[in-house]
Length: 176
Image (cartoon, rainbow, N blue to C red; front, top):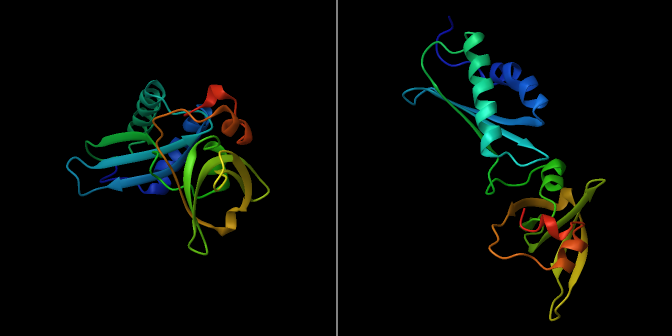
């Protein structure tokens, strides 16, 4: 039996196929050998939301795979979770998956824009922003290379149908 925790690469290698079959990819693995008991956190992301039933299913599968491979030499805590709303959007796939969500975007020149994420293609993201001094919306195509940080915002009210339409979403996706 192995002692201690497996490496991040070993965890990904053991679990990657199982997560892919469920429609998710492993975004990150965080190992904490100093915790008692040691903790393995697997962060998953996918095109569909990671709900509690799916987290439970993935946790059971991951635990079984880790135990069967004798990858962990002592009792451990396994946590499977999503990226979380507060994690920055760092790749084109993150922007694609966040389509329809409101975000604060910091540009390379230091300026900030708040808008609704629209479609993402060819290294650009569409951002639906309020028109200054007017009650309408405009669309800006922004190269992803010019974005240094983007954080999805939690919303407590539904966006307008027009704003969602410009972002390429139906109103059924409001607030998702």
